[in-house]
Amino acid sequence: MKTLFFIVNKSLQGNVCGQEFLDMALMAAAFDQKVVLLFEGEGVNALVKNQCPDSMELKNIVPVLNALPIYDINDVLVEEESMDVWGLVEEEFEISVNALSRKAIKEQLNLADHVFSF
Amino acid sequence: MKISIQINASPYQYQAADTAWHFIQAAIAKGHEVYRVFFYHDGVYNAHRDSRPPGDERDIVKRWSSLQLEHDVGLVVCVSSAQRRGLLEQSVALKVGGYEQALANGFRIAGLGLLMEAVIESDRHITFGA
Image: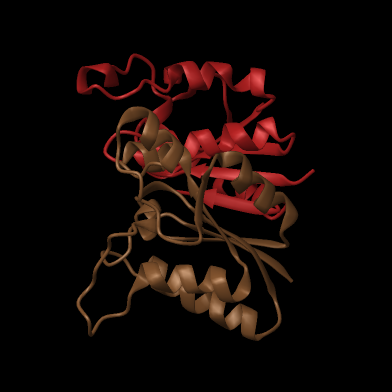
């Protein structure tokens, strides 16, 4: 089993690749790999509650976020510094996350076999 | 070393497909094995059979077809990315009344499972294009 890091560092709206990117993470989990999702930079906004991408005829990722435990994806990391930049606190997020400092995340990244971003 | 490649960007607009191709040539020349090239997102346009660049330019699509022919490198196009962009596998095209000859020689259409298998099997998986 490999450890695969998937880094969401862009908003999921404005860059439609996000949807196909998450498909990749789910597929990795379906192949019994250890999947870690990391939200940083602008990407932290993807977790915010009460988004209505339906109004732009884009898919809402909330069902995917809520389904992560079903796929055995239990490591959802968020970079604290990015949360500060965007003025967000954990209570504003759709799912429970593990907020870590940039330094702590870097240590975890060193353990990854592969790192993906989009 | 066993290497797999992922290409996420369209040819001619970004350099990703060029860089990847040169990287693969160098890797093969050094004796490495290129296990698979997976085309995702706009990268699927690398497989467009009817691409016709001006005669004095590199032909990116033909280059991939030759790579497959000469070195037996698997060229796999993501099915959902491709269908969104109108590149249909022959059997699907027949069913829905689409264009049946969309894919250039050497490419085949498959799911993300083949990407994951490549990631798991390879020592290195390298992505080109944002």
